[in-house]
Image (cartoon, rainbow, N blue to C red; front, side):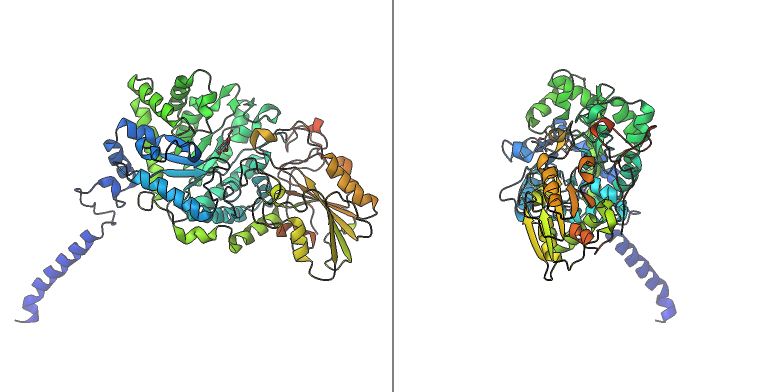
Length: 614
Ligand code: BGC
Ligand code: BGC
């Protein structure tokens, strides 16, 4: 046999073996996988094909279960996840397993997920939480500055890094979904949620919101084990309510709504945000939870949002009428998932009944479930349902705290620096530190930290500003401290840390933003002792400071910096020259509020974008 005579045979063998290899690589999109398989379980199929296949197998009960989100603390029994085919669980502010340690979160998540995976169709739950400045419900997590401070950095790359770090901490505890970024455009500082937005202009919501989405989700949803679902909130106009009332009424025409409050959503959608939360607030008297025009026509239609809409906490209950009509109106308006958060059985039964009576069309249910499943498939939840423990150690890691410290440095805004008193020398004889927030991690963190409202004191590991100063000054300088500002006499300088104590949501609504008497007294005590004052304001918004500003040689707005007090010391002692610029116009007095960049008459104490440096 010559080589020439066997050549055709060899060629056929080669071709045959190639075709066999091709068939084996089922991830090749050109060759559809074996159809005897269950299509939705096979990641080789396109997401939309998997969605339709799964949807076609689901009963009405299974579909409606997907649309229900219960709080972990409200579960009457964990097995209800399986019994009612619940599609989602959340942790509201402070809703944590005990003990509140990362491994316990992972164990709880895996237990819940196991119940979901053992249902007939094995559809994974998606677990949501407010990780709004780090993974802030978890003890020991890295706490980043609240968004108002992030807005002052003007640095979307840094925001993306912070969100990426937060996503890793979420992944290490199993959680899939953060209720962030909040892209509210707060227009009135009396609002208790002012600190949750990036600033008073749509430009900041667009730039920083999109960066946060990219950071949380990574290059693409499901692209890595640490990709978590982002949720832009609260749609729409939450920051524009009259008087800054939480959950209030945004009285603006449609053009204003579109110019100020809508652009952040377009940017978040373009960045790939897979979920959006609907606002408690109303637009010209109509509750957003029932607004078909804005939810369905504008958001899903015009803006092309193909992810899912979640309600706010029992948000549908605030619609006029009884619970039946709440469910009917909200689902027909376009809500896909309801954060019930406790009456999941009532919600499920009510919606089932409404579908039976044709009050809610089955097509609307299918659309809602399609959207939820689409995101679950995109995230890779069916393939990787359980906690990736290789990230558990990243919770509160040194690397993440370093990113947070950088955020703090860049978020500080220097408002006054008379005679260039800052930066302070590291070799003074004596520094006196004073004020109620000088040695208080809880105050630095603000609301949404460990508990819903947050609280003062040693609530989680971190470094206070006093500790940060002690760690920065390593020479012979004597550092003294008093809460009230007493005993400052003889010091070269006084660093007085004052401001607001923690609050969240409506509990932070204020009609008076003057400094507390004890804060004013602390500044006066130091000044009266003949000691120059460097004031550091810890607050969720601008406050009325004009009466004390003349007593202060330097004044720093530090917002709610979180656990990494070192970033504040870095600025005070010149390891970082300030770059932060005001994300809000700074009012002179209460009568001037609301005051925003672009107002026809504009005369704030410090304009939007203001910030000194060395
Ligand atoms: C807040 C949301 C939050 C939800 C879950 C609501 O009260 O308005 O921002 O995501 O609770 O905690
Ligand atoms: C929850 C929060 C929620 C709030 C709404 C609290 O009990 O912890 O997450 O935003 O209720 O009122």
